[in-house]
Image 1 (cartoon, helix red, strand yellow):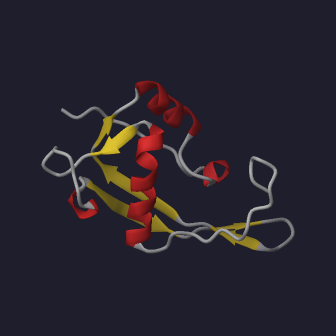
Image 2 (tube, one colour):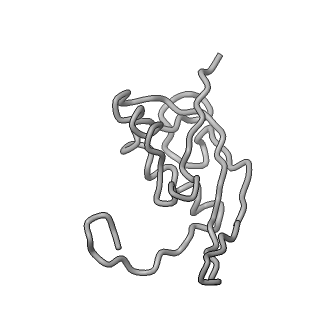
Image 3 (cartoon, one colour):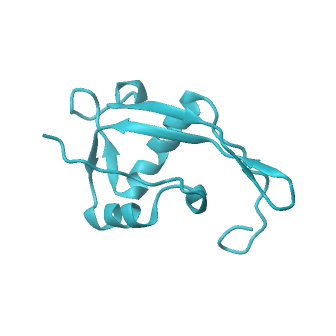
Length: 113
């Protein structure tokens, strides 16, 4: 069930690098930040953005019922620019994405020097 109480269809993980990059790009604005280009100007092409996928895993969580759940875990590293500080703080507190209950969606932010 979704948070609105409606039944949700089957959810498929983003398994390709392109799908995973697109996932982050699509959520950035609503999360209070934008991904910047490698030249620190407005990027028009997602390949020009200054972030990379540095780790990809597919852990399986085993339930008591015996049926496992396969997750798709990705670690991104790169540059972002905060657009809305209030929204960004909420993203840091609450996480990003659907699998937060499994420890996904956490962000570590380090100021650029």
